[in-house]
Image (cartoon, rainbow, N blue to C red; front, top):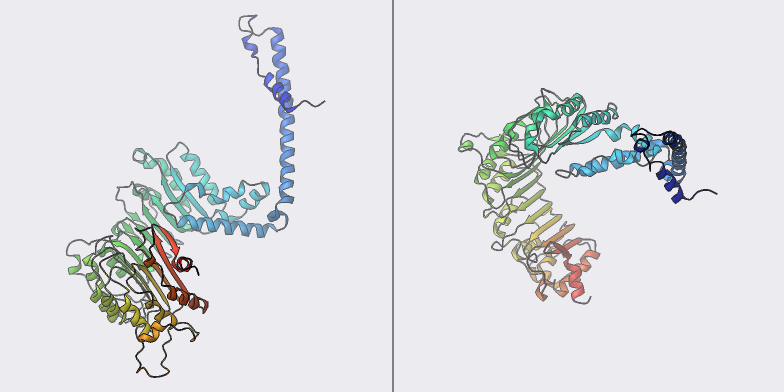
Length: 546
């Protein structure tokens, strides 16, 4: 009869229930019986170990066979297809990680996760170089730095000769006591592959940058650099990598541009946070191929810098985002904008939210001077309706307009603005997309003039629109607009979580909006209530029992 599992465990425990060296008979030396017992225990343990090892190996083989037949990915697909699926998964995880600043190290090793599933998955993972072409490395304060360097080398060796995406993140709680030299073996390994770097991302203490780059002067395949100053870092260290002939994308956060040495003339994309006005001007002068420039929270330059600054014509720049520090307008921005001529500009974002000043004349001067084919305008600043109308009258090419503000004292997008859109096709004649975020300063019926003039079904009309039309308007006038989408988010509910009857869309208007939607025009009207965003059209329909 086979012993039960419980009795087997009891039997195994009995092999270690007595130490022959504790024999009391002969002054600490085991007696004859104790010696024989110890020898027998050793034989039994050896037999158990060998038999158990054999059984475990047999079970592992059977489990692999079960996985093979039960897993459709392996059983039904060629290994090449499985490898491709693995690659898509790893790339999606790495893309998500790059969008997080910094990312969670628990998600930083997707190839190892795949390799841990079963033997066949491990074989596929280890022989797919694409899985190992991205390395997300955390700088750890531990005694494992030497082994970490070896693990990184093994990882990168599995990538074959593919271009590499490297990211290093400081993960050292007590970083001020850490000697940078302790990471040198790891940095040496990473630097050995510099000829294959395609992307380099550093979320690190600035002290480490010098050691990461070392005496390296060039990275011939490097296309993307992303530098983020560690939250705890107070060091000022130059990032020096002067020969980067393939560099196209550069992102910098809370690091002075003057502390960076690289090849600016190849850049097509730049994004920077906490950039000074003089640094912004330097980039526009140096990066002549720049297509997209995003300058967030632009700060003041050194005193009198702009007094001697020269005129800048940038013929490649198509997309420009300028934002000032939150809650204040930087007057030096207007001086900088007055120095620019941007004849290729297609989209412009101007974000000085919470600032009390809208530089209408400065912006009109820029667009008039540049004569650029601007199609997208995003204004994130409190601007009076008339100032906004004055600006937009100079921009007939606009197809995508976004307006947002959070100032109770400034009325934007009023009935006057909406009526201009409804009745004057010469005002923003090519407008297709309209976004608005802020406080409602118009009657609900004012929306219908724009929307009904944009739908294809001429049968949809609202009395309000007809009341606005001058009876002398020639018959057959084309009052059609090209509007494809209108999205409105009202933030006046953010501090008032309870809706009164006046907060709902008027009954006849909401019925017309439903018809307009059915006619093919995309309309979203949302209400932000304490961070919870609700569909105001649906809320209104429910309120009226429709």
